[in-house]
Length: 284
Ligand code: L34
Image 1 (spheres, helix red, strand yellow):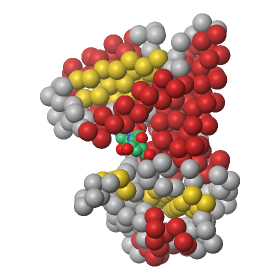
Image 2 (spheres, helix red, strand yellow):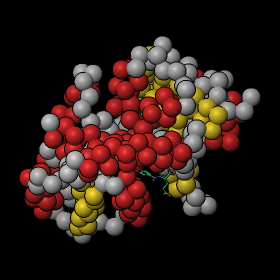
Image 3 (cartoon, rainbow, N blue to C red):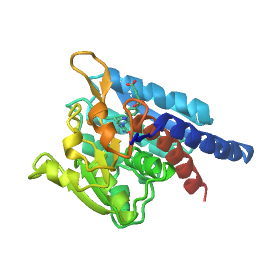
Image 4 (cartoon, helix red, strand yellow):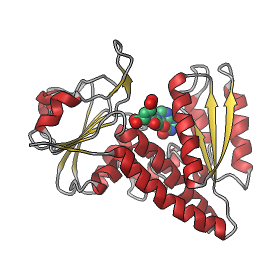
């Protein structure tokens, strides 16, 4: 059976249109929604993602401020910029693009962002709220994965979901969100014994490991839904590829996301949604 290819680009466009209409209403009421993005250094992939974020802001009518700092910026300097943005009444969301250069204390920076302006949901307060089932702002990538599943008609409640990868940004929040929607959730990782067998139990697989095409058909139960969070560059062709071997897995699954055009665009759409939401919460 042919699987459904989940079109993340189209679903992201739909979400951005919904956000655009709401941002328009805010503007009509005299409120401007503003996102501040900080990019440190000149990582080419980060530059692409930040550019896509700014473009999305334009599409939905969110004002974007951008701060580009040199690669040798130190922690204190970055902190002072974050604090200044915390204090600005005209800034609704603050995003510090990761990864940061090695000399910067990333955890210190993420903790300095006002939790009420934390569009990424990376602050421990927001992570904790998610963990107790009272999310305020949720990390954009896992939030985007849930939207993809829901809007493609993939049922979550009662299903076996296996998240491969345990990062703070994707794996852990992903597991919480699936749990909140009543899936039976397993977090698998590099130290998991019999990884193939564990992943093969899943009705829903979320791959977020950062290993090009690692998930082959041998890991997948017939009819599973497979969401590929990986964004890797193929060493030979230089092309973008996911953590899932798409051509191998597609024939055995019921639904699958491509890379590019799957989860990536959703991350950005959810960022727009989070920024709008934060602006509304702050007005109350
Ligand atoms: N603070 N740092 C912070 N927040 C985030 O949510 C991110 N992430 C990850 C990296 N660092 C971050 C992103 O924005 C990954 N990420 C991201 C965003 C957008 C895209 C990929 C990753 C994206 O636009 N992907 C396109 C292809 C882009 C290309 O051609 O390279 C896609 O279709 O998948």
